[in-house]
Amino acid sequence: MPQALPGAAPAHAATPDISPRTWISAEIGQPAATPRSANAAYHRAMKTALAIALAVLVLLFIGARFGLLGGTAPNDLGVRNGRLKPPSLTPNSVSSQSRLYPEHPQHEAAWIAPFPLRNGNGPASIAALAGVLRSMPGVTLVEARNDYLRAEARTRWLRFVDDLEFWFDPSSGMIEVRSASRLGQADFGVNRQRVETIRKAWLALPQ
Image (cartoon, rainbow, N blue to C red; front, side, top):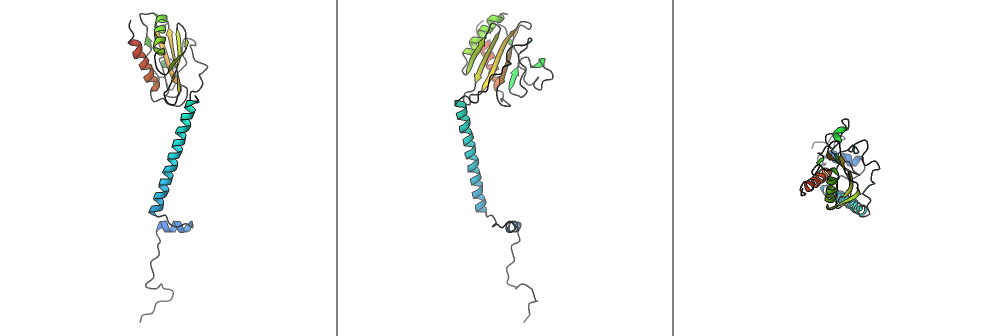
């Protein structure tokens, strides 16, 4: 009968599991993860992420209801040296005078066409435009002169505020316009869309 060599494993001994998962688990003193435990961990992580997202939405809604997302009106709005304030440095504004600032990072992206006058009359055009603004949902006219309008547009749900300005420029014979978000880094085209909606209503007025 053949004799086993000294130190040799018995012929019937099971081959040890030397897979990477078992080796790593043994190194850190933990049992190897099973497909069932990994699936449970994934679902726990998803539930946690959903709970966090829901909490953030609730906080945003509460903040919006109390006006915490409206920001503060800039103190440098208005006309200075024949110009409205430059567009924002970030892509969340439009301005018909943005091309007056060739070194500005948004001088092309923020540009929007000015408004034409009605019958060549600046003050009458501004007065008619004020009527358009007053009729628009979510828009509040906060300053009105015979050559300048300033309004605040508030979004429906989160109550973010955008500042709108319209100025009759006698040198160009046009109504210059600027609209900018107070908060955030991007507006996803909201300011441009709003100004074009105002323009459409403005042009639809009877002469």
